[in-house]
Amino acid sequence: MHITHSKQNGARTYSRECATSPTVKPLAVTMKSTITTILITFVLLSCNAQDETIEDKIYSCIVKHYKNNNIDLVASLDSLENYLVFKNILSSKDGSGKIKFYENIIKKRRSSRS
Image (cartoon, rainbow, N blue to C red; front, side, top):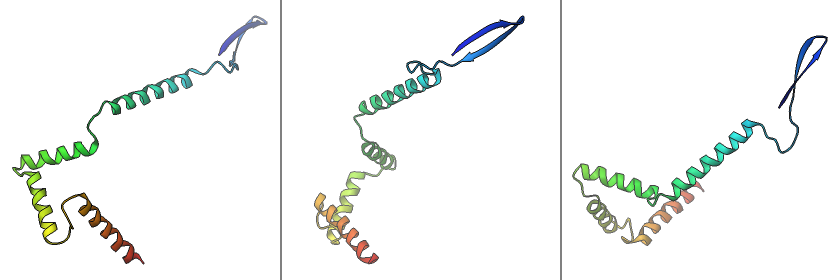
């Protein structure tokens, strides 16, 4: 922006002329893009610096909570899996047994909607 002044009949007059050059950007636009770039860089760097996933953090929190209440979570989950296999709710304790369990839930839900 350029401010010019002139004297006409002894009085000063001021006028503002905005720069129309495509290479000159208003300060607000420049600052906004700079701040945005800095924030995106910060987020990407902080995400890459984390080795622990959100699932790991949640699991750690749950283990800590159970430990504070004197409950062995791993033993409790193992006992639950054994019970679910014994009652034929799970076909096995491995991942495939759990996948089949959830697939059956999806099938039942789809058939009840029809």
